[in-house]
Image (cartoon, rainbow, N blue to C red; front, top):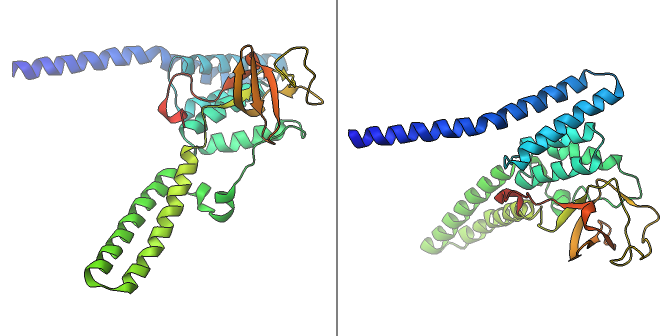
Length: 273
């Protein structure tokens, strides 16, 4: 009984310590939400922007503290969008989707922000082969697809075992259908898992000149600087320059300070995919 009492006391102490540690984070989020709502009710432009930027700073500070989750990043993206920081908004939505590729608000808001960028800016394609031929790739949650894959695998295995046991070729043929469905579902889940790479990045500077080489003297490769919010892939680092690839396959060099990687800087496993 005495040992059980000590275990209970230690558990209570750990819970209390955790609750105390989470209080500043919760208070910070509440303050960010309050600032965001107050800004929504403000008609004066400068005050409105300052309210949204305050909310953005508070959400960002919470994320910097290690509280990485898709809802927090989506809220950060919304505040950054309202604060007219498109680069920070795209980065936040991409980080939300790196953790949860099916997060509906992050998906919808990212697609909207992409429409705000200039027409000439290369943008990632909204859909791919799986989206074209397998509509359920985006309509079904990843967890549902994973469950479906497990069920179809079990059905296929049972049919194949029965075919071997009873020597029925018809059962062997029937087992091929759930096997095909299983393969399609596994491919769909794998696409999500590989959807956010460690070399994905977003232009967070207001403007980033795309140059032909890693030098400030190199000529620009585009008619205008890349605006904040452009999504790129990092190919090579030569500090203080980074070679990037745009969504249209074109390569360029930009200043290292103009980019930020999508991968969660706090090491959330969900973002390292």
